Image (tube, rainbow, N blue to C red):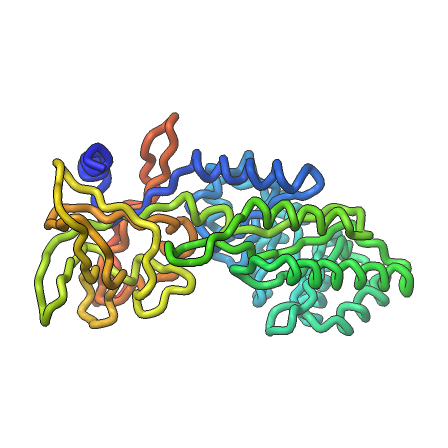
Length: 395
């Protein structure tokens, strides 16, 4: 811990995120080895857009859900043939821009009948023939009702600008029961069988979002993710569908590669409670399932020198002027001191994008990628958010 403390303190200005790309690549390899060659991997870049260029050799495609994400792909030099242009809302001007610039290279998704008609209209105007996945709802606002999907498939010959390559289905997030996956995969499988029998439609592709579970907290029940993947692979082998299956994964691939570093900058003892104030805060660490900072995430306490004694419990609070700014309550540390660094693990997904980043006009943390070959690579420098919260006259 002493060695890592010196490394972080000398090379990484806290607060900061560091994403270990070697670890992420190992994780992608592990998933591929268990699921087999039949399964393709689509990375949902909303989980962590900073890593997309670094993993482009390991990933088959990218789920892009907004114009902003599209622009990030452009800046990163991502092959547009790898882009699946998704998202519950697609504006006409944004689709037109992609078609005018990249034509039929991306795969497009249709989340509603209106969206499908818009895709066809714009493609036909440009004399394009585009690939489209129809998203069927899983009982929420996303996707389209099965009956609407069936009507589109039945009338598919009317839409000469579109090749309906298959079905898109998302089951949810943070799920680990095979019974849920079996039910949903069987539903999609039976839907495609029914469409083939009734309309002659033969799908080439299923894109499925399993929402595999990521463990964030130490007190949770032991979870064997490799066994889950093996069980999921067995379910795929049982499907009647023999086309391409793509799994959309974001959190499951990127969460474990991220560490958030924040430094203790002050300490106090108020009303019988020991507090550590850090230079980060709850606006920069977001754990799915955390409530009132009561759960203990995976973490490391980094410090210089040797320390003896018993663990003490501290409330870890950030630098925001709100009583809600608790990262963790009752965190066991060994004689915490100002200057120590706390490393919060499994922050590779969403933390850097889902926090209340503009609150109190605090600067956004630096973001680094790390691998053994290249060391640390700065992906985003510290950024002043105050310029976003107030526009001066003359600007």
